[in-house]
Length: 371
Ligand code: GZL
Image (cartoon, rainbow, N blue to C red; front, top):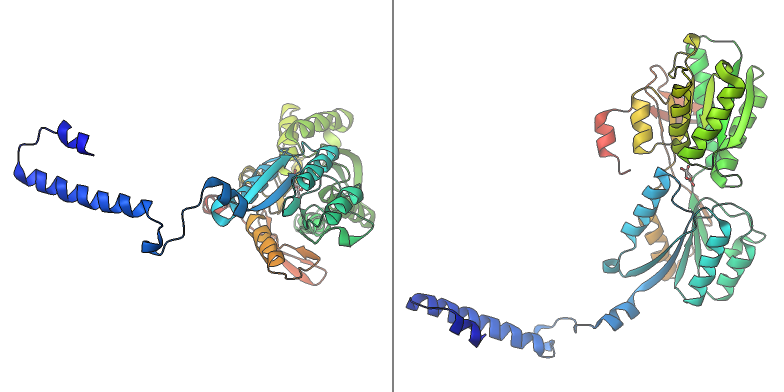
């Protein structure tokens, strides 16, 4: 500090007084910092080692990075489990392979994390890994997709979507749509399925299959997995168009990314997309309600988009805090989700005694959405 004074070519007395006063305050403050801090009743300054030791460690086994939904979900979890909230989040991208996720769970056990978060790429095959976590005394919260295990005590709680209801909403909308345009002819449907064995695929596919079996005029002429990706969605749509060409009336896309691929393929093949079935426009039904998916819905390219929220971060923090406080969690919790369409005339749906709004998309809604 003294050197600094020498470096100054000080001319005015007043400046010296101000500088001296400043230095006295600085000296007092710096001296105060080096004391044991008790003088200021502040928390003792911790070193990085003790900070790390006080954090709650959470091993996060994520499905992959296959879709807009997945990226939004990863962001939601990472933004919720931060160091300043007392968490050390250890993220693992499973690249849509169960063996990678099981390996990650075992690594989390070796690292003796405090909690494990699992979004399972498929439902079956988790018993041994979850049993190892249980034996290690590490609580596991499963979210989004479900695990199908021999003993539900192998995980502490699940929170996610009702995928069958999502599919039922989409199929009920299609029924209402056909009635609203007074169309009582046959329709040919193709299904771009999600990752086979994933809860989202199981539920959405079953809802469509059940609707087709109830509607004698609905014909499911092709059904194949696009693995929730844009590239695979485009690839299987191209093949379906070659095989079925102008006979396709409805494309049931089990997520937005496959819808993007399907739209590209349909346009390249020269077919029309929209909501005028009688004018041979192909209807696109999609799921997720991601930002790009809703923009396409606003433009009438996607006829109806059934939401599947990826925003689990804060809910998962609350669940871990509750476990930390010794609370018992509900075993299974379903999240509320909406539906979107800019086709005029279907404002709500009635399903199993419940009403579900169908929201119109506009720029304001798009700007205010978190994903
Ligand atoms: C559904 C989620 C699915 C999304 C896809 O909850 O698991 O996985 O619908 C994502 O977009 O890839």
